[in-house]
Length: 143
Image (cartoon, helix red, strand yellow):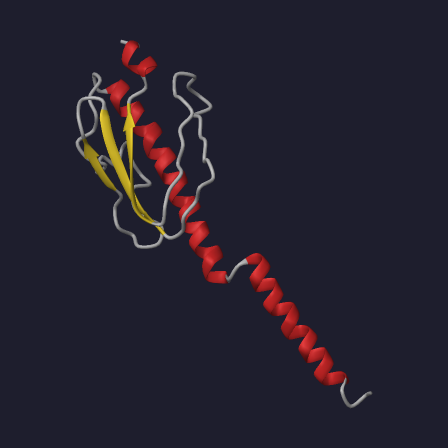
């Protein structure tokens, strides 16, 4: 019996380690999810700062995200590349990021300091995703 004890303990440790990784996900999966959470935080920040810019610049969208006085979190946390921002029309734009994971959960964000900003969703698939956003009607009507 004592002869098999070290082998039994080793087997239990291996099973526990494999089970832990299976249940909790691999370290690389956890890292990818953290990067995606940061990307969502950045998208929310940029969404709110674009509205601020719009309100403070005679209802004009920014041409780019290079205005460091307004935009600070404009680069992907993993690659360091700038998020892609495109003006579509006077009140609509898109902002794109490359996500490492798919997430069907609703990331609903509301700016706590401004009631006119609606709840928005940040659901995304894996890969390049562009979110088309429009200046909220309450902001457009607030002249």
